[in-house]
Image 1 (cartoon, rainbow over the protein chains, first blue to last red):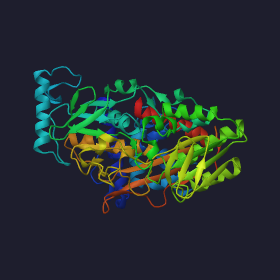
Image 2 (tube, rainbow over the protein chains, first blue to last red):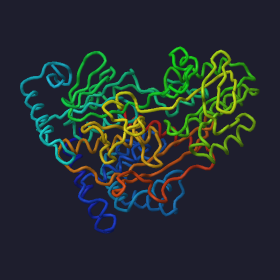
Image 3 (tube, chains in turn green, brown):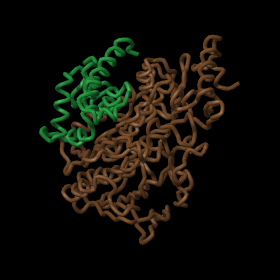
Image 4 (cartoon, chains in turn green, red):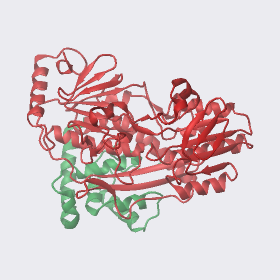
Length: 112
Length: 434
């Protein structure tokens, strides 16, 4: 639907995800060579944060946010350093590599 | 003439389309395995059921294939009506229209919507036969039919007339409105009794949320009325501390919870629930019957878990009994601690959509899918609590397991979570249908 641009962004997301995988080799074993990790993990966020992170409600939009900020927030939720209703529980379900890949995908999405 | 001779819109195929399709089906027939299915062009996916699972799968296959896969969705109803939030209609704070979303958004994604019922599958030629006579050919078939009710063990509810009097209101629609009308017609001082079947059933927290919603109505409008919750299970099946707390703090004296209550039959004349250890007369009776996968997913041996639900490969949601047929949502035999929820159905659908797009392109499927559940329950018209969980694929056990340490639930309800619950509904409906 959104053609070549999405494809390029995806490649970008994959490249960043691969970088994340290098940093934590244990998690990289989970990732393997699958190309759409970031897209698929980000799709988990869509139920509350909107398709591709474009929210239609009080939940914050994630599309076009800085990847490093998304990663930092997720790690703060996971470590209990940032209060939340559901996110401190959900963040504990993801590895660093999964969070980094999803953040890269969401950062690459158009805000609207 | 079967569906393979027709284009997706029912017209006769052009020669080019025919060659494309023939090439695709040749590739599917020649290889036909998980790992490699190579299609020349425009492979076809048929989705049955446009609820949380099916609609999400249809949209995401169009989205993630860049429109390269033809998607047809078969749906009986004219519009989507959400089961999540429908207890609020019974409580009186929402209308059914608030929970209704049209299907035109799917059409904008290029999904062909066929209003009909899928009756049968021919796995040999890969086609689905519809109620009005049309036959749709597919390269991959996705079934998301929800649940059917089992009335076998409640003899007096066998007839449609009896079922119209003793409502389930477990599929959002006319029954939801009718149950609300029964409660409104009941005079103050009356009794509402709900019977909950043995797990597994659709949406584990929903019966207890429903008790809250009816209690909200009674405590504001019919203060002399009471609620009896008759549970075939030995305890509250979801968010136990949360619901027990709400009943104690908000609705003290309104709700009488009776576990281990197995329903044997209903006496329609006296409006009495006949249970294994007692009889309970009530003014409004709500029986949630036991459930199994919708009929189309029980064909061809696919309901291979206790003859009720469908076992699937959690990497693709392909039936373990029928190659090329995927099953989503409440119809599947769930993994341990995986609830039958709309949210989960949406998540199944995206794993399935990613896998179907990959398989039809001859690419690798995600070897380690992760999905999550977030389920909100309303204790009144504004205050809400949640339960969450994250489930990851376990390669050894070949199933989805809860990630250790993930998930949790609210201890008490709050208006703040009510705002997130509303946002959840807006976003998930858009995620599946817009």
